Length: 434
Ligand code: SF4
Image (tube, rainbow, N blue to C red):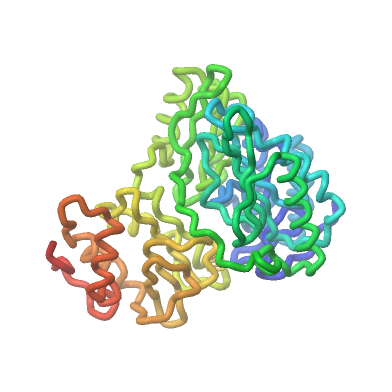
């Protein structure tokens, strides 16, 4: 393979078209079959060290990423991936549950439908933009409801049959048979392609309403029973990132626990599958020792952070470096109803959907958005070095009996807070009484 030129900003850092960021090129890898062996993960970690800056990530959509490449090291890394026997997904992004076909709770195995749509859309290669995506949710234990999609298909039971709810862009869902759903999905993709490589489903007539505000499903952490009597165990990368040594240690731990393979999953999770009843907790214990998330109530599970400075040239603050402090400071509010997003600029790479609280890097400091996206950031802004004190004050505010963290923030918003928190210097007094 010859080195590939850097892609333009705004494109996705795909396998064949890595994107330039502040710490070099970033290459995204989705295993075509969804799974890699522990040995392949160790090999990928070695390649990330040899050809990148040894930082690796799992994204909110469940892609593996290798950071810090140069124009000269892209091709050697691509070659190393292929030599490891990993087949990267190329072309149209079709996301399905990593447990498709293994999950006893799923309404339908999404893989056959994904294969038919991939095959049918093969002629559109090069005509669809890199961000166009299809999400096929088979209705199992791992929900894909939080993922934005141009075409979304969700399996639903209808008596003894399976029907598919199909949504194109922000249009109304249609309940269809699998054959009809395939035809509608392919028709939508053709019409998007006809509008050019910048087009998305929301550019189609009748599909331009705002995308559904899907609630963020919980990260797939913990143990999942599989149809064959074995188990999968999901662990979370702290804020989606880690050094190559961490990935190597996780591959070793999965192998020692008896895992058959490893699967990158939504919400920055790595699933080990094929474990027995002792292997699943053994993998979780070792992952926890390595600093990973193993349970949904870990406050870090509710905080998304982009790499920030210095990794990204657009960044106004070190988002990922500040994320542990933010998770710890806001832990009293993070009861599962609140999502927090640290976005070092208004682009919002780490969490495309609106969050309960979004901290946005601006030229002059950090702005706060309540129940919105980073693009909604206006002012006022605060200096980065005052963030910790202000968050401590926010977290001190007592909740009314039965009030959720999100409810408290909504009540504060109605009272002109937490914007007020941004206007005044942080102190150690609670913001409001119950
Ligand atoms: S959101 Fe973060 S990673 Fe994305 S462009 Fe902005 S600073 Fe960079």
